[in-house]
Amino acid sequence: MAGQRGEYAKSAKRREEILDAAFTVFSRSGFTGATVSEIAREVGMSQPGLLHHYDGKLAMLEAVFERRDQVALDILSGRRDLEFLRGLVEISRRNHEKRDLIRLYTVIAAEATNPDHPAHAHFQRRFDRVVSGTEQAFAQAAELGLLKEGVTPRDAALSSIAQTEGLQLLWLSGFNEIDMAEGARLHMQQFLTVEL
Image 1: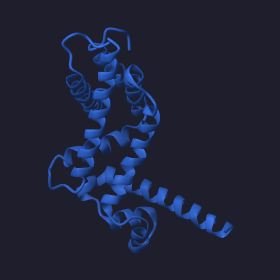
Image 2 (image 1 turned 90 degrees about the vertical axis):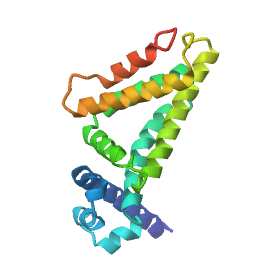
Image 3 (image 1 turned 45 degrees about the vertical axis):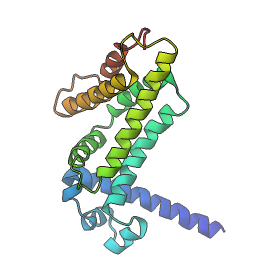
Image 4 (image 1 turned 180 degrees about the horizontal axis):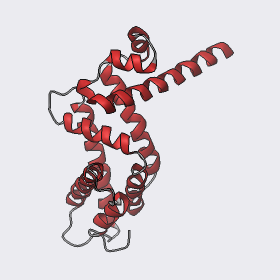
């Protein structure tokens, strides 16, 4: 039994190393330009060895983004209304320390707007989840009387997400003075009757 645990730990460590290599290659080449053989070379494995852990390039990409999204999910777990919105601000604050990951996300999210892109469904699901969660938080704020009159939770959610994504793009483009967390907070603040 101890041997199996040791093998599991080695396998889990190897999978993390593969994801680190996939992140490096995707950052350098984008999803379309990256190859499984390039990722295998980056991690120092054979292609069949790598495919033993992940069944292809898309599976690795999804795992890279799931690892990123898990941090956000942990921050938002159990939060409602204003606390959920404050969690979104915290995610923007942490993203400031992850420029390469944000760049990768932005490039591949843009590539995946093409319905034929292999990651299109993944990003569609992700955006649906983000919009739904943010809309629900604004709706909960409305139930507490904290949403300004005339503001719909859906519009507030879409506007807030668009603003956050846009700030990230500007920041990546060299506008380093941008404080993404404060920008997100100020933007969401305009929809609320209380301080966020």
